Length: 342
Image 1 (tube, rainbow, N blue to C red):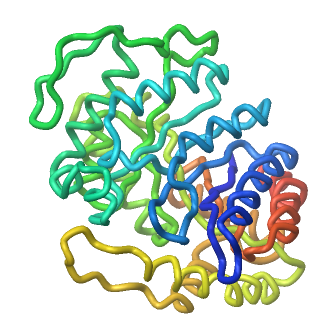
Image 2: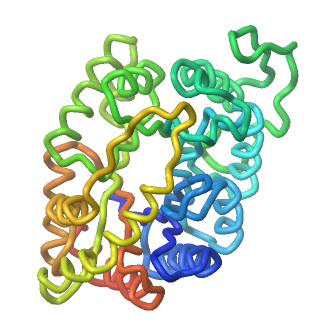
């Protein structure tokens, strides 16, 4: 089992954007110090829900500041960027870091980002498969040409080639954020592991893993490839000597951040969207994920792994909104939870 942190660079009420980013960087550095396996970086545009607009840029910084930690994006929003440009950056980080970079990608949402970056609503609604396929080809082949609906260009060499890395991996792994049966099938047919969100519980995640395996087998993926797929489960982790204290910390801090962050999202076409109740959502997360004593947190992670078959975790550790408390939370995760997981 591999446990990492999930960093949103969340801007809590009363905080500046620089403060949120500083906490994000420091919590990632603390993750390496605490012995965690990885750190996964979220990407958002124009909202205080997350103040990191380029997960791959922040990944570059953290790869330079760490020596052992795997750093991944969770996720780079593919409809708002050219897949070749993203592929070039991913290849660069893969080679320069000695294979410590993971590229997580997703569709994002129908937000105003699509207008600002000029990609349009079609890139979100129907263009994701074409972008994903072009990105994967760029990371796997020596030269690439395109003749699709959105991207068309003559054959060009891939520079730098990910396979030139001195690491054992031929290229950076690509992980796909999956929230629906359609996205599960998309990832499975390509043999790409999934990143599953923190809003769903073990039963639904187990169903998605089972569906992924069914589609992967139908697509001709080998039994070894199907069983060894390293899916990632996102969640929340808050550690305290008593579960009630851990829950209280999150219920006091997270709803204010969620409310101002989620309300700031603007749809590109004016479509109606409903927002979760911030308090109820926080309480849901506390019930689904490792929130409580170190022993309880370890048991919850082990149970999720057993029920779902997922072996990698990306845990939100900044739910208190406080830098010192976040660092302490990471330290306890490494020192008091990981030893119970073997």
